[in-house]
Length: 631
Image (cartoon, rainbow, N blue to C red; front, side, top):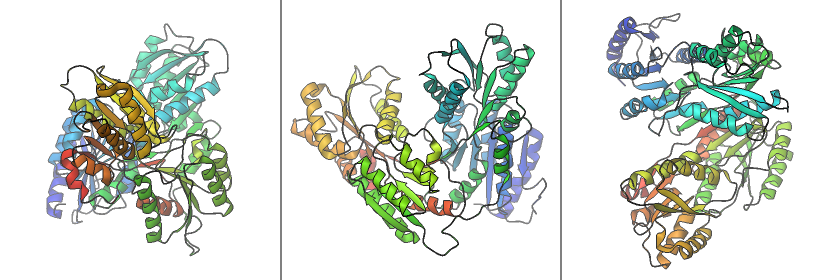
């Protein structure tokens, strides 16, 4: 924070920067703020362009939220679709002395280095399209793989079973994580329809004009297309213009963004230009809310906030427009009638030290907030959890919270909760259901990213190693969210280098005993040919260490040991040299859970996912962390 005089001077520089394409909000515009006002924080907002309606809407949402804070000033930049210019814009914003950067990207691969450099000096919030790696304070966006999957399911509904159904996919920027995720989700959803094929895919860099030009060229050979899926509404609009140019009718067009503006997806659906679209909330207002919390050093700031996407079709466009126009927030029952909020919490079990710490955190946080908590332990049995959820429904609790044993098999009981008007919050683990509106929010970790972080360390650590690297993977409970994500993320990274090979992937259940038994099995089969053990949690890793020692080998030296959780027991093993790397997965979710419960009961719409901020530990850093570890 700087003095008001310094801030005023910086704002003067910002206004002069209008001549080079920058503009400042708060000193100019409809609600001009007095030069005498004290400026507590200066925030920079870097945009790759202001052509897309989605980005214009993002800036408008940022401005509206800034209006609520008299001590904030914001400087916006527009890179005019030039990634090098955007990197220069960020450097200029840093030169103006900003306290926090909000950045939205078209080219995350190219701009990740400047984001990393900025993050070393000030907080950085990334909006909409993520960067590669983990060097930022907070990411706010959507689940792009899920959006792609929803678009694929919608495409199947629109394309009746038959022969020769052809789709053209129009992607954003080549190599961007957002593009890869949306495309992967789309293709996965179509995999069970042999009559549908992707006839062609083109990259249009998120731009309407490029989409139109590329498709004009392509339609010469693909005039018989049945459906077009564009990764944003701007490119979808470009596709409609190309179809019109070729006088091709009857083609279904699906977009993504759903902005309510003249050329936004909502109006394009209402006008019949698009068949449907999926909202991709900009997160502009949320970015300012979190920016204030970050700058004021509030506790419990998440690492990622994933906003919910909604499908818009001609059937619901009018009602969706009315719904989004309502800005009044009304408290839900339990806030104004002076009775405690009641939560039903169905815990998965007591399978590990991590789980015990998770339970303790939820119980303690509820007590501290004066929230009545009804607690049940399912002892690792899905049938018991379903029984307890139905019990909570019958008792008319305000909110149901549970950590699912496995991902599937919850549709029926969650539908019962929805019909009873009781929201469901998932803590620590996710579910896989046919309708994601059956649950309200997820609070926990990004399990796929945890696996990636484990693999990135391994690849970096053994970059100079000669020959192949043989890995034994100890999986968690079959079909559970942590198991699936940690496996996928790890494999995503090692697949990029052929020398890393998983020679055995053994099914455990997150317990010490299973880790020990599975490692005994692996050692009998592979012996000293095992170079690395990757365990999906600390308890299994600690069991594996005991088995390695029993075989006369040195864990941490003869066999590298990588784990996820970062419990005190694991950090002790890490500090003693028996482990090599641990990715944190914090169980202390109680405070964030209670905040979400209170926000919901106060009438706010919760994000789809709230992902916690977590660290990584090596043998060198473990000793320092041990003194602070609560579990």
